[in-house]
Image (cartoon, rainbow, N blue to C red; front, side, top):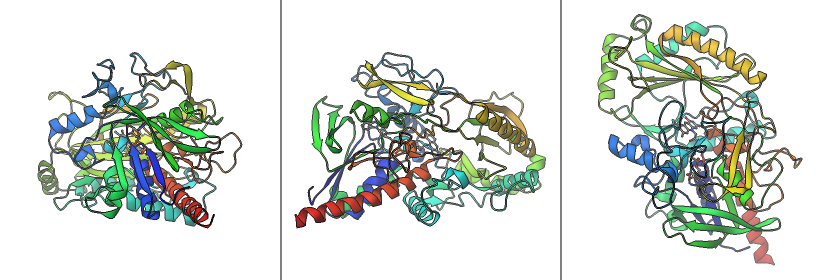
Amino acid sequence: MSNHPTIAVVGSGPIGSAYARLLLEGLPDARVIMFEAGPQLTDIPGESVRNIADPTEKARARERSQGPQAGDFRESLGIPGGTVVEGMFTARQGTHLFDFGGDGSAHAPTFPAAAAATNVGGQGAHWTCAIPRPAFSEKVAFIADDEWDDLIATAEELLHAQSAAFADSAVGGGIRSLLEEEFAGELPQGYGPGTLPVAGDPQPDGSMRWAGADVVLGPLIEAGDPLSERFELRDLTLVRRVEHDGDHVTGVTVEDLRTKETSFVPADLVVVAADAFRSPQLLWASGIRPTALGHYLTEHPVVISTVALDAEKIGRFATEDQLDEELARRASNPADPVAAVNRIPFSEPGHPFSLQVMYSENTPFPMPDDAPHAKNRWGYVNMGYGMRKFPRYEDAVTFDDAELDYRGFPNMTITYELTSSELEEIEAATGRLRRAGGALGVFVAEPRLMPNGSSLHYQGTMRMGDADDGTSVADPWSRVWGYDNLVVGGNALIPTATAMNPTLMSVAIAVRGARKAVEQLRADAAASVTA
Ligand code: FAD
């Protein structure tokens, strides 16, 4: 073990970035090399593409994130075109489906909307930035509450949490009041309608600068900052294998996707944060195969709808003049249609769901001018319930050594089923969504359950546990069971059934993992000095 440890981080999303930042801050002699399979999209690495004002540039950045299936590198990588389709039932902008139907496509008929982003910043360059805290049984039982609160507070700092975004929007406030009236007396104190915490920095003109991996990396990407001198980000570099020798990893074999050259990079610690499908796939390809790897897959069943805000209803709480002010403010930043973000959080036992309420001038789908409620002066509320999926071994991504995918990795098959436990909660939440919509206006898109995989919140495939009993992949500090210097990160670590957007929780888990890794590397360095 060197006194100048090298740490290899696989994946440049918010989780890999949190590890890079905390490890460099905690270890003054370490250096971090971060490998990212996708391209860098923005001058500031990992910035949210939502901050790009020019619509053509924004569309281009999203296309370049859609993996080798789209963008610049499609031809050079020999991947068939036309596999990325934008629309309600396919990949969201900036993401690409795993089961795209072409050569080397994954197989996911029961989880068809499974998708990823391949770019510096990962999905965190495209995300909605909602960062509610996990609550009640969503939390990890074996992490004590006082430690958990500290981990969450650190994660919120890393993500530039903002609990009162658009709080001054009169229409946003009116939406909260209407929901409060509808659900009065049904929700526990402190868990009623409120603003949705988001990751970003409010700007003087009332808009938001949305946070991506850039804010998590912070000083690591600031020219001249001493930490930046010990940090290297290699984009378009695919990690092909984590190399290991028994219970110890020795480094990573990487392929430079520009030159096709493959090389070995030695490392004292490897952190794999390459999303909930491609991380377990990389471990599998590397011969690291705990029983639970890829299993216990969960996501959030999602029921979404769009409501035209009713002038009379909202008019009880906001005036025409206030609406005019909001419209003027939004016109100054047309690239970002979100005008207010509200929610009703998860609470138990009565409301084990998470309602996200986004207020915007437009519908997220094209509406013909003559459609009922088209061009609604008071705008639209895009609302969705996220619900729980209870972890089961049989919901899984499995890998086939005999069939390679388009990247040359053991191909994935995703098997997944909603059971009566989920279907009951979906029915209950859909009933509430109908009530919420009725309280706000008229549905222009009726509540509907999205296809499996639509949430983009994939969890459980490298779940953490407090015993090496075959039901978890990682120990309580995110180290793969049986390996002393292999850490995994991301939503895949979440072992519980959750309804909230998972990134804040995963960053909190990463903070715990990074603190332990710092401790361990310091102890190793001290031992090597005395040896
Ligand atoms: P990712 O951000 O997925 O990054 C993983 C990176 O690893 C990718 O860039 C990938 O290219 C790279 N990689 C994969 N394999 C390799 C390899 N072998 N070698 C090198 N690199 C590799 N979450 C929320 O909490 N709130 C939200 O509001 C929210 N909204 C979302 C909206 C959209 C449209 C999308 C797409 C996602 C949303 N999410 C949201 C999910 C959120 O973005 C993810 O939880 C978060 O980005 C996960 O971070 P990560 O670092 O674990 O993985």
